[in-house]
Image (cartoon, rainbow over all chains, first blue to last red; front, top):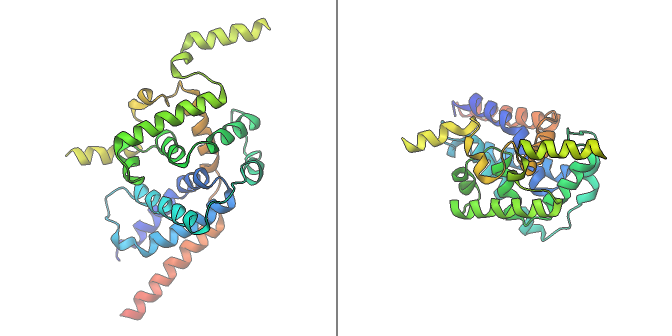
Length: 182
Length: 67
């Protein structure tokens, strides 16, 4: 395998995003890291089957996703610790939205069915196209689109926020006006 | 040709975001990226780097043995 160094470098470069996807799927950091490690070993063993020049990120995401679902099937359904491990860790990394807000979002994301959750993460955060995401999840592009759409609607409902259409400049200035009035 | 175009746009921010309601004006999209980005921004754990080194070394050792 003379492509070794490139493969290693590309794998390394994909790790942060792969880890974020693993956290999105499993809901916990410790499990997510186990999942990433298993994925790294699988990917390394299978590197001969990877075609250089094709999308290594999508390839790795596919391996991780398959690994996640096969482990889930083996272990049976486990209760996810939504409020514990992850939220605790999250408070160390406050975003511009604030810790509480982020924890609420995380909870809302966890209430989505797994197929909708992975769909909205792959499209909305990982940066894949619908075609790539559909390939990763082994479903039709149309199915992927409808999952993303349903996920977005459910998140908007559970977080009580409006869709994109309401967030134009007018909506922002209206918000500012309301805030300064109170 | 079509496939190639699809592949190349991988890291390029796409305009189509508005159509799925996850664009820059979307609260859900922004929260999603904030959550994802918070994990991405964490340093890569040493155990991952160690594992990668071990895999690499094992492969090299295996290759030398073959020769």
